[in-house]
Amino acid sequence: MTPTVAAVLVNYNSGGELRSALQSLVQEMTCPWEGVVVDNASTDGSESVVTEFSPEVRLVRNTTNVGFARGVNQAIAATTAPTVLVMNPDCRLTRGALAPLLTQLKQDARCAIVAPQVLDPDGSPQGNARGDPDMFTGLFGRTGALRRTLPGLQIAQRNVVTGATDAGASIVVDWVSGACLVARRTALADVGGFDERYFMYWEDADLCRRLRQRGYRIRYVPAAVAVHRVGQSSKTARASSLRAFHRSAYLYYATHVARGVLNPKRWLARVLLTTRLWWKLRSDAEFRMQNSGRSD
Image (cartoon, rainbow, N blue to C red; front, top):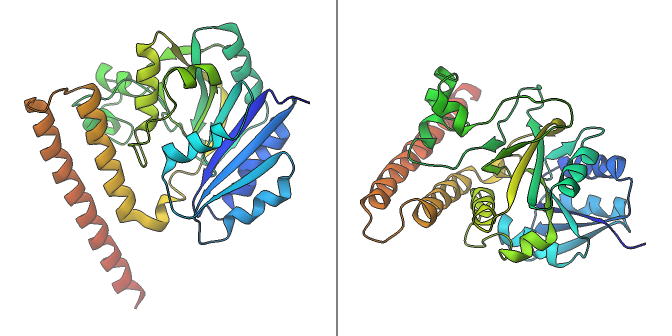
């Protein structure tokens, strides 16, 4: 039968998480479907679990780590279903999550992407539906210090959408995390898919912004739930992940907010992001040294 949903995952050293992700897909699929896992040269053998889900799920092996955006585009190109489910290997759908997402996509012809509410394993919201990033996102974004201190401020609530709705209802938002989303293939094709200049991080914000510029809508369905163990793959290469995050943040800002090489906001962003990266790398190094000293 012709598949109606294509599930695509990009794997890199996800350990045992990939099996849980694929199992959650199997239990949710009530329609003909196909799955593709693109493995970015994992070294932990995690890609081998894909054979347990054959023939619905196929494995595509890369000889190098090509990044998330390129890996997703590669997986989408290997499938044909009109609806595409993008999900991280360290994410899993809870029972009943997929049906309301597919319903929302069918009901709104201009909806390009719909996403569930994503929770941490302890049940706390990750804040995967968000407002367009700007100069204040570093302070009031999902992990921003001021958002944790002053979550009731309007700027904090704009950056991270936490409002609940009636069961099955949706909210139109600026963008949603690529950890778990359902997309219309024709809309993705309309904007050329994910921008492969982003190796990791911010490619989801960029994609949603480009879709909205074409007149599409992004919807968030809090009643549908996925659980995400954040950063399971990036833990194996923490310093590289931090560098990728800050490079992508600058690329997004220069592309969508501070256009023009001579824009002073662009230079300010580079200074601030470079300083933040230095501080993060230094803090991580000190933490590792302290832990190493305690274990001796």
